[in-house]
Image 1: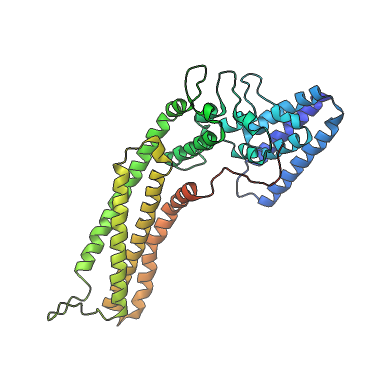
Image 2: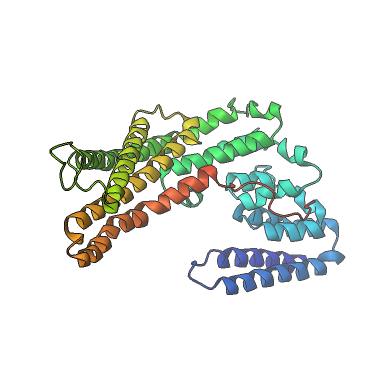
Length: 371
C-alpha cells in the first residue's frame, strides 16, 4: 500500500511540473484549473495516509518533498507540511541537503520564500551543513542551472540575478556562516568568484558591446542636433541676428525639442562611455552597471524622440504653412524610428528597471503561516 502511495505522489508532482511548463499562449484559466486539481489530489492522498505509521509516511513523502523543492513547487510542499509537519526535515540521503538547500541550488525562489512565512526554526535551517561541509550560502554560491539563467536576458542581468541571490542568502544566514569554510577549505565568496568567473566575463563583453553600439548612435544624434541648433530653419535676420521664424509656435517647438535632444543624447553618450571604462568588479553588476545602462537607454530613447519632433517641426516650418498635408506622411514616418527603438530596446529597458528597482523575487508572498 505504501508503495502505491509513493508512486501516486511522485506522479502528481511530475504532473504538476509538466503543466506549469506549458507555453504561455495556452489558456491561463485551464492552467489554474489543473493546478487546483493537482493540489486537491495531493490533499486526498495525504488524508488516506493518516492511517500509516510515521516511518511509512516519511518514506512516501521523501521523494515528493525532494522533487517539489527542486522544481519550485511550493504549493505541494505547503500541503504536505501542513498535514505532516515533520516532512519539512526531509533531506537528500546522499548529500544531506534539506529542501531549502535544494531550492537555493536550483534557484527556486517560490520554495525559498516559504522561510518568510515560518514562525520558528528559521535559524536552524539557515545553519545546516551538508556532507561536504557546505552551508546554505555555499550552495547559493554555485552557478545556477542553465534553464534558470536563461530566464533572464543577457549575461550582465544573469550575473545581477546571481548576486541578488547571494546577497539574499547572505543576509538570511547567521554571521558566522558567511565566512565559514567547507571541507575543501573554501568560503562562500571564494566559491562564488570561481563559479561565476566565465559568466562575469560574458557579462562584461555583453555590456561593452551594448555600450559600443549605443555610443555610436548617441554620438550621431549629438552631431546632428548640434548642427541643427546652429543652422536654424529659415535663417537669421541680417539686421539683428534673430531667427526669422522665432515668433512662430513651430519654431519654439523645434528649439525646445532640439535642445532636449542635445542634452539627453550627450548624457547618454557619457553614461555609455562610463560603461566602457568601468572596472567591472562583481559588486558593480548588482546596481552600478545596470543603473547606468538603464538611464543611458532611457536618455537615448528621449533623444531620438525629441530629434524626430524637432525634424517634424522643421518640415512644417519649411513646407507646412502652404502645404499642410505634408505633415501627415512626415509625422507617420517620424514614428518609425521611435517605434523601432521601443520594439527592439524597450523590453531590455523594462527588464533592467524591474531587476534593479523593482520589488524583487524575494520576500513574504503570503500571510498564511508555514510550519
